[in-house]
Image (cartoon, rainbow, N blue to C red; front, side, top):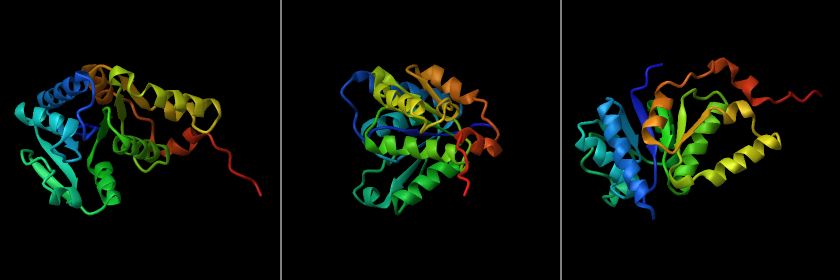
Length: 200
């Protein structure tokens, strides 16, 4: 599978540490240099604005998938290549999953976490079969991965599925991991769940 469009999930806030903004600028520029289209939430605020502007300024292509309610308040970045307006969170997430070839999650709030989990569940249940990576700046997601490891220990999440999530604190390294990821066969999703059918 050739990767051309990558969704970048990130915060509508800039965050406390300058490292978050620096990483967003680096990611936007690097994706443009590699001719990778940025798909993002459409916002003209926070890290969303930063990564989309950086990609546009570097000559890249950027598509925003915006909610109608936010677009009405003029919170959509007017400088990007294309804006797709959706009328519900469900429609918006479906669009992300369908048009993206891969996903990168930067630090963000509950929306970014929701989008990460949506992708993970989609991969777990065979709805999609696409690489997902987490840019773990400043150890932002350490506690989340501690919980996931606990879930594996307690046998609620399989190690095979946890291993599908790519993790790095380095922008260039994570992007390369995404581009070179070897995804398992879509037909093996049930095997990776490691669940036993209940016998009546």
